[in-house]
Amino acid sequence: MTEPHFAYPIVLDLGGRTAVVVGGGKVALRKARALADAGAEVRVVAPEFARQFPDDERLECVAAAYDAQHLDGAAVVIAATDDEAVNAQVAADARAAGVLVNVVDRPALCDFLVPAQMVRGDLLIAVSTGGAAPSLSRRLRERLETEFGPEYETLLAALRQVRDRVKSQGLPPAVRRRIFERLTEDDILAAAREGRDALRRAIDAALAQARRER
Image 1: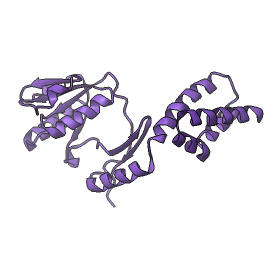
Image 2 (image 1 turned 90 degrees about the vertical axis):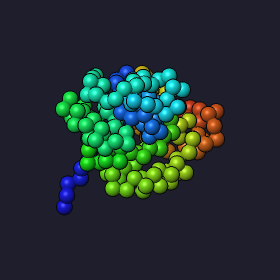
Image 3 (image 1 turned 30 degrees about the vertical axis):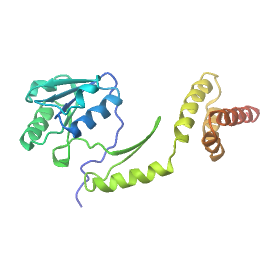
Image 4 (image 1 turned 60 degrees about the vertical axis):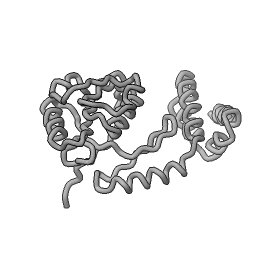
């Protein structure tokens, strides 16, 4: 049995780090915007750009034919041109520089894949088929979007605040663990579906109960 090529999933912190996208079409634009959304400083290299590129001030657009020097300082690189030779050169240059590279629709040239993603605030669920069936990844993502609604964004925003508050109170680890587990139960999620006020009341009640049971 062949060993899986993409076997180690990670979530990268790209905040303030340079990401390079080579290509000026719609696919490159989508990749560049996703990297910018993740906090990266995005440099896009292409002789010409789709008209939407100038509308996004987060993107540094370098109007030039690709050169290996364009990868200087990059943490990750994505090649998204319609020229196979350019894409292959980007992959080779990135590897020579020790930089992780993704070549769109060419898993054999990739160090990493960009999975289909379902995002609800701090909740990120990623689906990958290892490049075997991207269309299946998209279908699974669509199913997840129906199952995990906007209430999860509301819930996680509240839990982040509560977590910081509970950790600052000097409670024993066992008590903290019991509180955090209690706040992930179904009735808390149901309160999140009703809105922020209902969620706040449910969380306050759960915290009060946990303190009584210390």
